[in-house]
Amino acid sequence: MIAEIISIGDELLVGQVVNTNATWMAQQLHEIGIPVRQITAIADNSAVIIAALNEAFAHSDVILVTGGLGPTKDDITKRTLCSYFKTELVFHQPSFENLKKLYAARGWGEISEVNRKQAEVPANCTPLINHLGSAPGMWFEQDGKVLVSLPGVPFEMEGIMEEYILPHLARQDNQRVVAHKTIQTQGIGESYLSELIREWEEELPENIKLAYLPQPGMVRLRLTGYGESKEKILKEIDERISTLQKLIPEQIFGYGNDTLEQVVGRLLKEKHLTLCTAESCTGGFLAHLITSVPGASDYFQGSVIAYSNNVKHAFLTVSEESLREFGAVSEQVVKEMAQGARLRFNTDFAVSVSGIAGPDGGTIEKPVGTVWIAIASKSGVTAKKFMFGEHRGRNIQRASLAALNLLRMKLTVDS
Image (cartoon, rainbow, N blue to C red; front, top):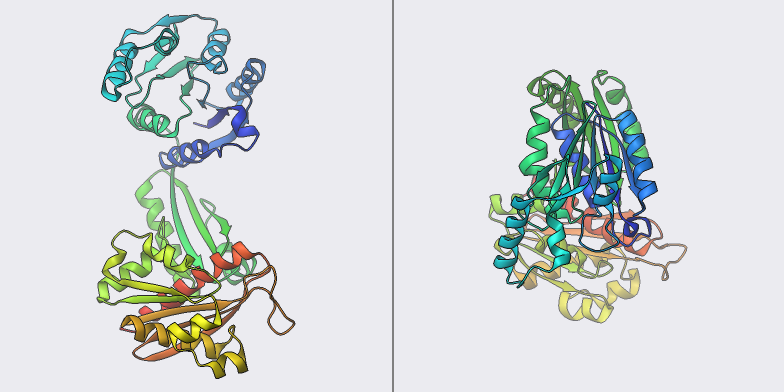
């Protein structure tokens, strides 16, 4: 069984809205063993929609369409589907009853004639009640293939998918099962990582594929396995991951949807340790990541954004001599920042960051992207230098992630 996703909406084509629906749908389909052949974004135009449907039916078994089901004139999907399937709109009473409940629950008053049309569906479809919104989903079958039209509002689409579509498709007799596992890595670029694990990758069996998913400061490795049994596939994948862990133990920080801030938070919580930060070039972004984790107040005490040398000296007791002799972006200063923060906040650990985020401020000796990161604990203070690049935003993100990863590695040996 092969699927295709068609997203309808001019807003997708002008970049006004990011197509998160297609991403989520593709993930859910893969989870139940249905690969996606193609994802297409098209305009709110009947001729374009019909052309996309013709192509999809020629190559795919399941076509999922989102968008264009609203009550206004620019939402033309229902009328186009009626034309495509040679049918007409009919009033669906259960959808109207759902609409009345929705209006009553949200205090929207009387249902207008325009909104009443939301309960109209093509005569030859199976309506799928939308308990989270006004536009029902529509299930069509033709020549042994399925087309489902869904609202474009993400939480409404997801509700219908989870209630009706995914359970039904999962019961179908698929010839193969698909299983995924994602390995989260930090501190190594995609090309260098691929060279480092080249032999391991070459030894993967034919039914297990590897994908590199890079983003600033991180690379996700997704293993996708195919077979007759999900349990057997996952066992094979786990065996391969076990070998990989021995190759890059410092770079792997988690799996699935783990984030560095979550992993660090769990370690601090388990060890009953506290943390503070002292930030210069990251401007509080490191503290933001740490506090984005629910329950961070159990271990995170606070942060100093020491952007100027005066603040570094006054709040973190960085010596004027170190600032004058070595400069703010140096091993000496970043170590003093970490030590000063740890003493001020009375924490077990302190992380400090000082660098040149850019686009200005670099020199031949210290170009844009130069960043020093230090970790202070009761066992002492260590620092490491990084060279990230010339883009300010990416430098801030990479520096923050590198700081978290250094802390993660420190936490595995320090207590």
